[in-house]
Image (cartoon, rainbow, N blue to C red):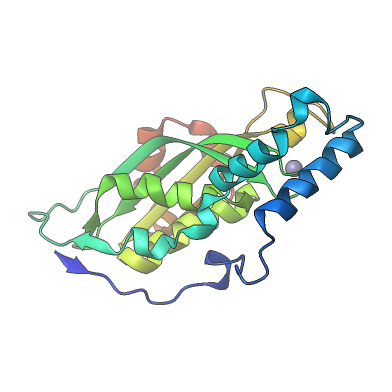
Amino acid sequence: MSASRNTHSSASDMPAASADRPSREEAEAAVRVLLRWAGDDPQREGLLDTPARVVRSYEEFFRGYEQNPHDILARTFSEVEGYDEMIVLKDIRFESYCEHHMVPIIGRAHVAYLPNKRVVGISKLARLVDAFAKRLQIQEKMTVQIADTLNEVLQPIGVGVILEAAHQCMSTRGVHKAGVSMVTSRMLGSFRDDASTRREFLSIVGNTNAFSVSNT
Ligand SMILES: [Zn+2]
């Protein structure tokens, strides 16, 4: 077992300086403004506790800002008895929030890497996805962040990340198209350079559509 080093943290990992963070009361007041903007009365009984609930929900929706993705992967294991095959965690459900409309993006992530002597606990891959999902996001950026963090910290032979997600900003507003999902991928190292590695990943994930998806 050895601790890996953080080679560097990109600025996008740690946004939201807490220095100018508004108080809880200010946040609740902002929700009352939005309730009035929607056309309702924040003073009616059914809405009295809503600002407090919304603000608490935000703490859950956006808890990723409190997490350092590099730290999640910090503990690696080097004694893997020579295991050198692909490691895949597929169908990781995630809930994220569109940074343009602040409505949910619900999807699944498939995360794979080809280890170079070091592996990480499998649950850490799911936590890595959540650390980036629980922020305001666009799917393309989130895909890159997951893949690049895994690549930087573990320095594996290759990394493959595929995200499939439905965007409520498309289904409940705007063009109102339900049932469509967006697929994004990022392939690094052998996943990019070696067609057989990429094919193995895609067949494990079982998503042939991803063949036609370009790297983001
Ligand atoms: Zn949106």
